[in-house]
Amino acid sequence: MPTPLALTLAFSAVLVAGLLIKFWLASRQIRHVAQHRSAVPAAFTDRVSLSAHQKAADYTLAKAQLGLLEMAFGTAVLLGWTLLGGLDWLNQTLLHAIGGGMGQQLALLAAFALLGGIIDLPFTLYQTFVIEERFGFNKLTWRMWLVDGLKGLLLGALIGLPIAALILWLMGAAGPQWWLWAWAVWMGFNLLLMLIYPTFIAPLFNKFQPLEDETLKTRVTALMQRCGFAAKGLFVMDGSKRSAHANAYFTGFGASKRVVFYDTLLAKLSPGEVDAVLAHELGHFKHKHIVKRMFSLFAMSLAGFALLGWLSTKPWFYTGLGVMPSIAFPNDALALLLFMLVVPVFSFFVAPLFAQLSRGHEFQADAYAVAQTSGADLQSALLKLYEDNASTLTPDPLFVRFYYSHPPASERLAKMVVA
Image (cartoon, rainbow, N blue to C red; front, side, top):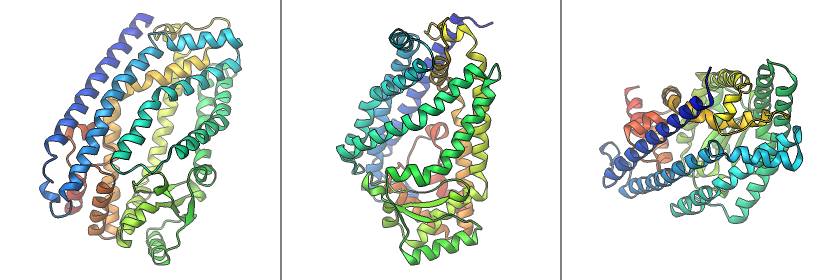
C-alpha cells in the first residue's frame, strides 16, 4: 500500500526529472537554431530568403527563452499548489467561508481556475503584446483582448460550471462506479461541443463569411467531390483581426462539418496552393485520423476516470500531495484538481509517442494531397506557411522527436520527393 511519503517522493522525483529534461531539450533547441541562423539550409536557398530565415530563427529563440522562464515558474507554482499547501489553504478558506457541499466545491474549482489564469497572465500578455508584436504577428488591441477574455470567462462559467456540477454530483451519488458514468457524461459533452462550436461559439469571437470567390469555390468544391467529402459550407474567417498567422481547418462533427479558411491564408496562397492545403486536411479524414484520435481520447479519458475513481478514495493521495482531506464534507473537487495537477507531470514522459504518431499522420495526409493535387503546389504552400508563421527550418532533431506534432519542413518536403 503506498504511503503519503512515497507519493511525495515519487511526485518530487518525477517533477524534477521532467524539468531537467525540458530544460535540456529547450537548451538544445536554442543552441541549434542560433548556430544555424546565419545561413539558409541548402535545400531551401532558392525559395527562402535569408531575412525570412533569420526572422524565423529569432522568433523561435524568443519563444524558447520565454518558455524556459515559464517552465521554471510553472514548476514553482505547481509546488505551491501541492506540496507547499496552496490548494489546501484555498480549500480550507472556502470551507470556513461558505461551509461544505456542492456550492463550496464549485467555488473551489472556479477560484482555482481564476487564480491560475491570473498567475499565467504575465506570460500570456508578454507572448501576445511583446513577442508577437515584435515580429509583426499581433493584431489584437487591448480592448479586443479584454473583450475576448470576458467572453471566455462568461462561456467558461455558463458551460463549465454545469458540467462540473454534474460530474461532482455523480462522484457523490453514483456509487463506486461513478467514474464510468462521469466518463460517459464527459464524452457526451465533448461530442456536443463539437456539434455546437462552429455555429454558436466560434462566431462569438470571429466573423465567418461564406467563401465568395466563385473560381476558388468551384475548385474547392470539385476537389471535395473528387475526394468523396461533403461539408456544410465553405467559410472565410477574419483571422487577420487578431493575428497575421495563416491557417485553414475543418471544424464541427457529422452534418455540422465546415471548411474554414483564414482570410490571411487566402491572401497569401494561389488557388492551386489552397487546393493542396485543403487536400492535406481531406487526407486526415480519408485515413480516419480524426476518428482514430477521438477513440484514443475516449480510451485515455476512460483510463483517467478509472484511475481518478481509485485515487479519490485513498487518503494518501491527498496528504501525499500537500492537502488535508475533509472528514465531514466531500473531497471530490479536491480530487479532481489534484488529479489535473499531477497527471501532466507523469504523462510528460509518454508525450514523444503521441508526437511521433501525429507526425506519421501528417506524412500520410501529405501523401494523399500529392496524389490528389500538385505536389509542387503543396511544397510551395507549406513553405509559405512556414515562412508566414516564422517556423524555423533548422530545429534541433531531438527537440523535434519529443515535441513536434508536425514534421519539420525539411522532412516533409523530402518525403514528398520520395513519394
